[in-house]
Image (cartoon, rainbow, N blue to C red; front, side, top):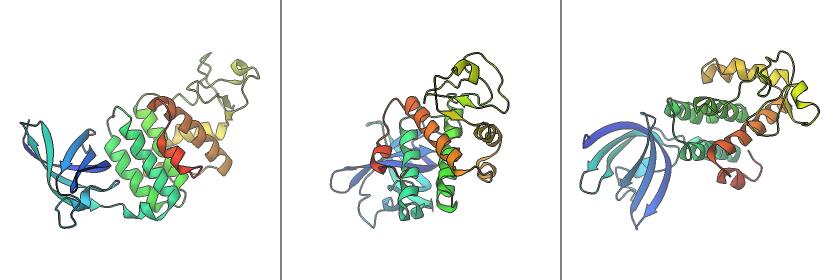
Amino acid sequence: MERNIKIDAITLKKISLGENNVGVTLLTSQDEQLFVMAFGAKKSKSRLYSGVNQFTYGVWDLYHDPVKDMWRGKEFSVIDSNSEIQLNLERFYSASLFLEIILKSNGSQGVFSLLRDSLHFIQTERDYNRVLIQFLLRILHDQGTLPQFSLCSECGKIVVNEPLFFSYGEELLCKSCNNGRLNSFLNPGILKYCEKTMGLDIQSGLKIGMDRDSSETLKKYLIELIKIYTGGKLLTLNSANGLI
């Protein structure tokens, strides 16, 4: 293991450790989570001061202490502080949900670039819900837990121009298999939206619109799926008090 590295990373979480020290959990450009000790980072003159806040994206200069088997931060250079996230509560809670999901996940290829782009677009897009939906679709897909939006989970029928019914679980049922049991469904427009945007990069996906009711239905469905994936309640959703 190299003792000295420089790596791009996004700060997911920080905890105070003593009067001046901070421990930070980073998501690195290698799609891995890394815990780093930032000694003295609470002091405004510290070289690490600007790097310990959540959402901050930059380059960390790190040293691995072989005796304590611990990474120490030496310097930090900001690429994007993503500070505008703090100016809007809805966007702040959505971005916080991104971080919590990643902290509770096992990681996947491309999660760093997904988070980096999502934090950028949550600040620049007028429809922040669309960014949240795209983030949830992509992280569920990358983890292999996203259902097929053109297929009945029970009978395997390929569905065209028909809704798929659900009970906030992973299974989607065609009209025949549902047989009147469930009332919640994803309409054909939602199903086509999911299939089409998943074949695009996130910036192109965000250009595709969806009506408000369909957007809310899909968001609620994906949030329930992500709860299953992360193994329970998400604290950010409770704190948001309905803002997400």
